[in-house]
Amino acid sequence: MDVAAFEFRLMDHLLQLREELTSGCYLPGSYTHFLIHEPKRRKISAAVFRDRVVHHALCSIIEPRFEQVFIPDSYANRTGKGTHRAIARLHHCCRSYKYVLRCDIRQHFASIDHAVLLESLRQLIPEPDIMDLIEKIVAGGCDALIDQYDMVWFPGDDLLAVYRPRGLPIGNLTSQFWSNYYLHGFDLFIKRELGCKAYLRYVDDFALFSDSKQQLWQWKTAIKLRLAVLRLTLHDQKAQVLPTANGVPWLGFVVYPEFRKVKARKVRHATRRLQHRYHAYCHGQISFVEFDASIQGWINHVRFADSWGLWRHMLKPFRIKPGDLRQKKVRTASRRYQ
Image 1 (cartoon, rainbow, N blue to C red):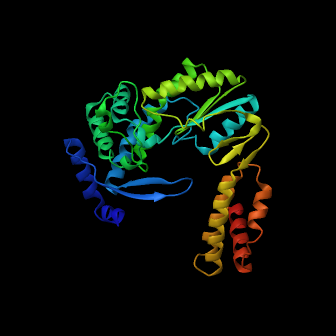
Image 2: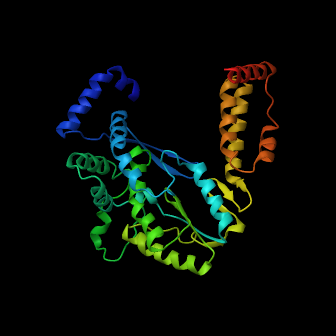
Image 3: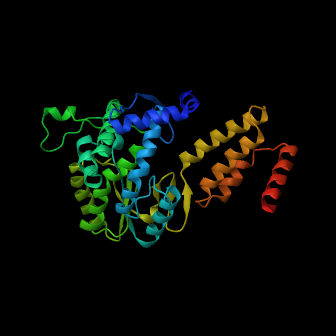
């Protein structure tokens, strides 16, 4: 309804937004919050549609600036990057090095400190009007994850540290860009100051590779100190130095030097979902096209692992109605002809 109402008088709303932005009186609206439970429990915050229009317009301006400075091995929310390229890069590193230090940041989006973020953004965005808009969007989401953050005390903090504005709403396009840039200086620290030649990051998950276990343990200590400057902390128990031959969990896969597997939890979730879709197809609740789209989407994801046997095992129970199968063959032949 939010989208339909905006598009019903599209030009009027766009002109009104333009006037608010140019005059400096634009203010973000409130968020709608909901929870998802896959891959883990997260609180998602959805902005009203007019605010999402502003977010996309803003990102179209600042994205090229970010792309000029980001390291090649940062893979989240970037054109030409993404999950599967991150998996391929990690696989290459697993074949080249004996050990890995894989880490992730604790409560990453909820922990991002507004003062630290805005100070870093000013170095890249000198225009006062753009920074004013950014400050409004950042401030508008300060309460979105307040219940998801567990207070961490850093050296030099006083009692007022509890009230520092922090947190970026998970769901905003802007949050993804700003999260990447928040850790850009950390990426440079890993590459330049630590001298790690094999490093990659996807949002708050990152991995360092070396042939020396001792070096990786030393790097972990340096990483914890560096993240404290950004008011971030590691999941310390998960950040362990392990042989790459044991497999590296990464973005829903387990990557070994010689092959890749899909995580068992991902398989269980996909099995339940496809069985539910198959039941709906058999009872006429969804069409064959909709069921087939679910199957193809899953296959296109897991084909980046050594998963041929998994395909056969999961798809074997499904029986397609003969008429639907003939229609699929006709459509496939038609696409090939075109």
